[in-house]
Image (cartoon, rainbow, N blue to C red; front, side, top):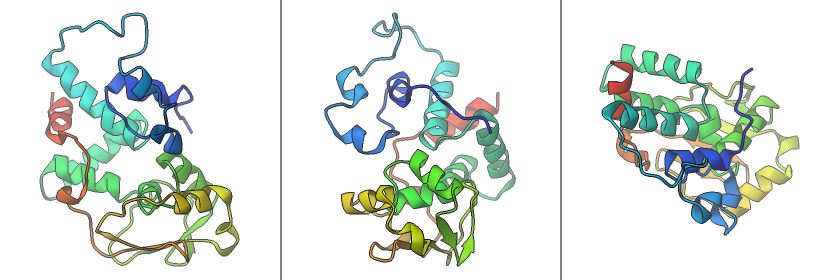
Length: 206
């Protein structure tokens, strides 16, 4: 499976926003975006003129990279959002939030989405008691996500739980059991991300 293997910090600098891709490091003075908040490369500190296409592209790239998707995955999810009822941009954001790797990250069981994706791939979590090792699995209202009993003592999971994170209102989390319940489907108002999803719709509508 294709995946991004370069420096995650370069992504934040390129998108001009802190995307919290490195987990705990993003909250320390070692954060590359805080130290060099301009695009990487020899021309990074220049301010080129950006046209409408560039603005739309950057918004699409920012969201795609925040959730750790490759281009084909992101486009496929966008097409799915188009087919569903509702506003396409908002539906896309809700689908992204419903991904299992994102839910584990939002519940505070991983320091980053990338770490959450690895934990899912290695089979450390169950959904309604069943093994699910597909990070793109979409949870629904009433689903219960919990770590395997043998996985509850894993250092990455314990460290994430101890660090604490603000839990979204559509999740009910029991840190002691490493368990989260989806009590409702997320709405756009619940997704606290500075994203203009309409720009993504315009990008794919060209």
